[in-house]
Image 1: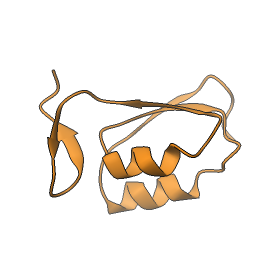
Image 2: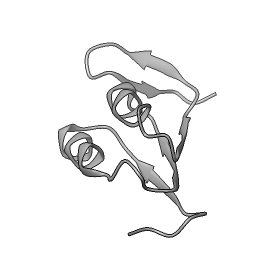
Image 3: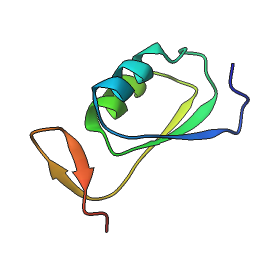
Length: 68
């Protein structure tokens, strides 16, 4: 179990999406991601603070790039 106050960065891709789906719903954690799909999966986790990188959306893979 991760400790409160921890931050992880999750990039885009099918492997990281699968990993995000396995995170416990009671995990107290901040997550930064550039993946819309991962953000959608984690948006239902009440104790996860979710942050996305600001950039343009590439529609095909569903990720952000070209950070501003």
